Image (cartoon, rainbow, N blue to C red; front, side, top):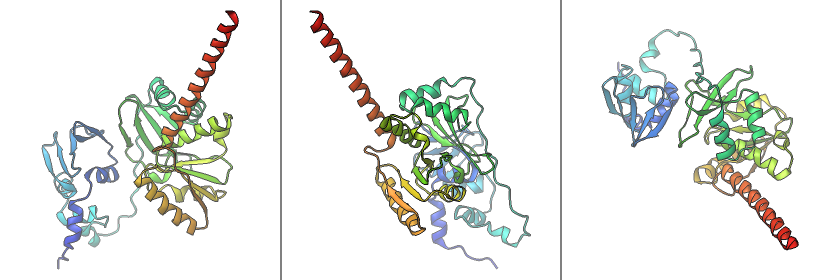
Length: 321
């Protein structure tokens, strides 16, 4: 007897975001180019602007939605495709013997570049991140430049094995996670003895906040006093693992973006972790994010130095006259 599938589930499956689904299911990363989302691993695979229609040019396969993709590309039966998109186990597999737990996907890291000139230019010059922080993270193998000129940020598990990596293009706005990334092990600087943990949406914001600590305290080691964790988004997937590995952390400071999505996510997390017994604070940036705040602070310092220099030149000129 065939069990009917709820029409609401089918409709939800048909309208599931293709880009997000393929990122989670296949570990693909996408770049927004020319009015479409191009797959980094398979350049001939494109998802249209609506994030629902797709076409895989090299295969000559196209369609609308994740159900079409699973049925046409992965040759999956309709009922199993609906179940896969809805997050349920495949319906046809329910009657099959248990084959045991599947091993987690292996993280695929891009090849390193011989030099890191683009990395330093992007992080230190364009983003104003302190060079001491960049150098320290490179030495700890948490940061490097790949052969395409992207900056790679790495997160490790409890066995010091890379389990997460996200890319940030040094030109344009490209960003994406490496295939096989597990967001539970997101990028963090969590070796500090402090009982405080700062949470951010991105690795750039994390490093910017750390740089601001140096700027504000005038101490090049100030950024090492506290723990910082990038969520790689607004979900708290990485938080439980981090807290389990760092029992001394009792205070969470939510430093998400100062926009509707960031404020909403921060409010939800604040309630959730306050209920668990943590002291929770929300620290929003003055601008949209902490990199904007950092760049503003650096520009102010540079302007002040320039003003003092000009005043010294003017005084010297007056004396010499």
